[in-house]
Amino acid sequence: MNKKSKKNHIDSILRVDHAGETAAAKIYDGQLAVLKNTPVGPTIQHMKDQEQEHLDTFNKLLFENDTRPTALLPLWNVMGFGLGVASAVMGEKAAMACTIAVEEVIGEHYAQQAETLNDDHKELKSTLMKFRDDELDHLETGVEHDGENAPGYEIMKAIVQLGCRTAIKISEKI
Image 1 (cartoon, one colour):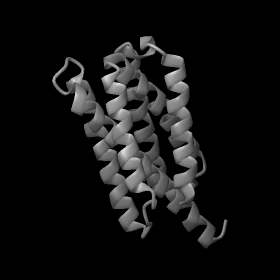
Image 2 (cartoon, helix red, strand yellow):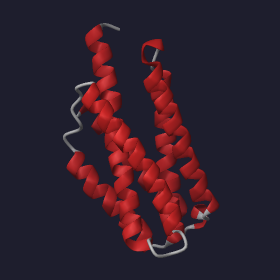
Image 3 (cartoon, one colour):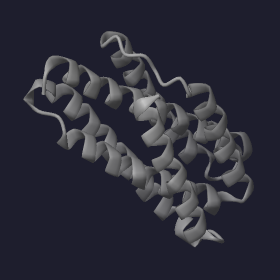
């Protein structure tokens, strides 16, 4: 891979991961707008705090690598918040079902990205693997909070995951 191709590859990784962490933070903001003062509120806040740490990391990496964020960031902000509110309005189990669906896709995505990186990018690879582990912990939290028993779980999961995968493909390029 030539120097320009490597730069484009890293830019794509940073752009899409920044977009994803932005959306994840907004999903949890939306859920907290509805569920903050419920028993699951502190759990959602904890996951949101981790997503904010991830987002702060990608903000720094975008700057350090002179990478532009996705042009669709405003859309992902609105859609993430809307998904968070919609899932939370359906109840705590539905909010956790949303978490399961999103974090499964993101965990897979980080692992796939890390596999594409060589020794030139050990630090980024390490960051991606740490964040993957955090996302999979969130998935487990969703399972522990009975998200798989939300009404309409399978269809909700399919729709949310299709949306996530579509957003990933778009944000890699735009």
